[in-house]
Image 1 (cartoon, rainbow, N blue to C red):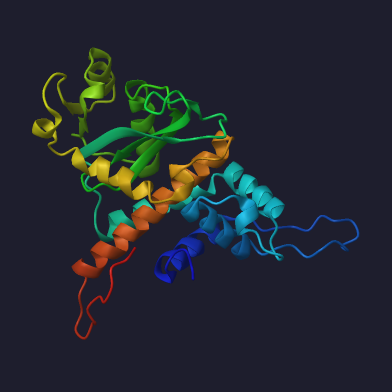
Image 2 (image 1 turned 90 degrees about the vertical axis):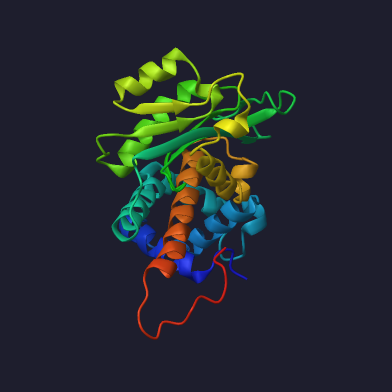
Length: 281
C-alpha cells in the first residue's frame, strides 16, 4: 500500500524530477552496477518521511540504505525540496490564492533522540534532546517559511528568519501584512523587528488567558498538527541540518499540495463532474 495517494505522489514527483540535474556516468570502465532510478529512491524517502522509519527498515534488495542516504544528501545539497515547495506555493496562489495579508507564526518542539546540529535540550521533555521548527503560514494555514533550531531556542529570535524565509519562498508580499503571534513573542524586540520588516503585529499579551486571545492565530496550530503527521518530523533521527531542512520543506510541499487539491475539488466545478467520494489524507 503506498504511503501517499497517487494524486499527491505523482504531481510531487513530476515537479521533483524536473529539478534534478541530468546524471552523467563518469565511471572509467562503465562496468559498475546499474544506477538505482531516482523514482525508486524517491519513494523510499517518502516512506521514511511519512513513517519516520530508519533507512534500514525501508530499504529493499533493489535499493539499499546507503543508496538512500547518498541520494538524499545529494538532493538536500541541491535544495530540491525548497524549490518544490516554492512551486507548490505558486500553483496554490494561481489556482486558489494565498492570503498573505494575515500571517501567523509559531514554534513547535518535537523529539530528537539522536542529537545533531539542530538538536538542543528540550525544556518540555526533562532536558532530553529535541528539535524546534518555526513556521510562518498564511491566513488559511499554508506553510510559507520554515526554520529549524534546537529545542532550547526561544521562539522570539526565530521570528525574523522565519518571516524572511517566507518572503523568499513567496516573493512579492502585500503592502500591508499583519502577523499574529502568541504571548511568547510579547516583547519590544519583536515589535521593533516587525517594524523593520514593515509588518504590523497582533501579539497576545502575557497574563491574559490564551483562549480569549486566540483570534486568527489558530491556523498555525493546525499547520503544526498537519506537519506532525509525518513521522520523521515527530521523531527527528537526522543529525545534519541540511537533511532535516530537506524533510521540512518536503513535508510543507505535501501539505500545500494536499490543501490545493482539497480546495480545488470544491471550488472548480464542471458539468458531469462526479462528486468526491473520499477524504484526501
